[in-house]
Image 1 (cartoon, rainbow, N blue to C red):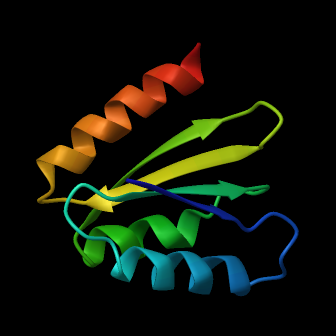
Image 2: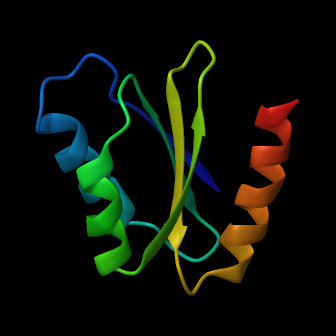
Length: 89
């Protein structure tokens, strides 16, 4: 299941805090689609350290779309791959 979180326009560190809080609740098959107006470089290493994978799509109206899922969740990874394909068209 996709969970969507728009953090555009929020001052630091709110976007990172909200995203990190949201991914902690992900269950099997779930992933987070975060919409951000800046690329959150510090977030990436934190996600890796906490056992998450991510994929970022740059550009377009949204700025940055960041898909995040648990690294051991093949079901979510397949769902994200399909969603990325949709976003890329």
